[in-house]
Length: 338
Image 1: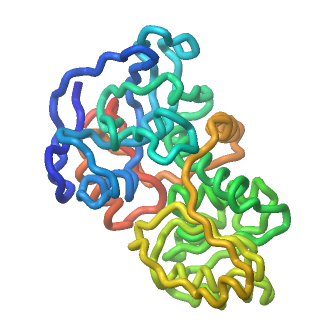
Image 2: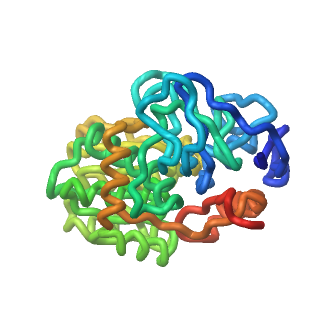
Image 3: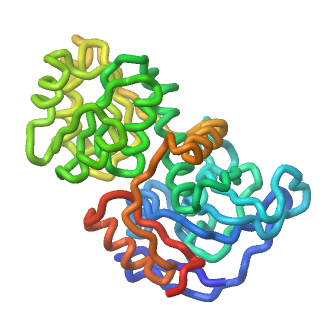
C-alpha cells in the first residue's frame, strides 16, 4: 500500500510517500481502507516536528482519525464486519480514563495511508448520510467537546460560554456542543471571517481577539456579568489571560489544547477570590461518538472543512495548516487521484 512515512523529525518535507506492506488485522482488529484523515496541528504537525510530549518510533505514519470502509477483520471480531463504513477514535485501549492510553498515529501507525488497522472497539459505524471527511471531523472533535463541556465544565442551560479558537476543529465543535446543552455562546477567533464562520454555527456573539480587547468585548456582550464557562484550546499567554479575566464569579475554564505555546500566566488572587475553577481534560465517551455522527446525519451538527487533498499532497497539507491560511479542517483522501 501507499503511505506517508516519516523517518526523522523535521519540517513538512520529511514526509515521503512510500510503498509499504499492507497491514494484516490481528485478533480483535479490523483493517480499514482509508477514505479520509484530518491534519491536526498538535497531533500531526507537532509530532512530525519532534515537539510532542510522547516519543514515536521510526519509521512512522501519522494520522489519528481515519475513516473508511472495513475490508478485513481479525479473529474474534463479531461486532464489526467487512463493508461497514466506520470512523475511528484515537484512543485504542480505552475510550477515556487511564493515564496513558495507546494512541493511533502516535504509538502505532496511523491513517496517512491507504489502509490502517485498529482494534474493532475503536471503529464506530458511520451513517450512510455522512460522507467520510465529515465523519472524520465529527468523530475527532464533537465527542471531546461534549465531554469537556457537559461532563467537566457541567454547562447548564442559559449559561454563557466563551469558545476560544471557535473556527477550529475543536472550537467549532465546542460552539455547537454548548448550544446543544442550552448555553449562550460567544465565539472568539483571530479573524473576522473566522468569527463569522463560528457565528454561522450558532454562536450568539463574536469577538475577533486580534482586533479587539477580548475581555472588554465579552463583558459588553454579557452586560458586565462575564461568562460562566471558557472553552479554551489555544494556550496562548496573552489570550488565556484575557479569557480568564472574562469569567464571572464561580466561573469554570476547561482546556484541552496548547498549540499557542501552553505556558500562560494565572491571576491567582482572582482565582480564589472569585472561586474560579480551571481544569484540563481530554478524552471522550463512546456513546458520544455515535450520537455525534447521528446528529451529523440529521443535519444538527456541522463541520468546517477547508479542503480535501490526495495523500500525495501531505506536505502541502501540513504547510497550509501551519500557515493558518484556511477556515476549517484540512483532510487527506488516499482514494483521491494525485
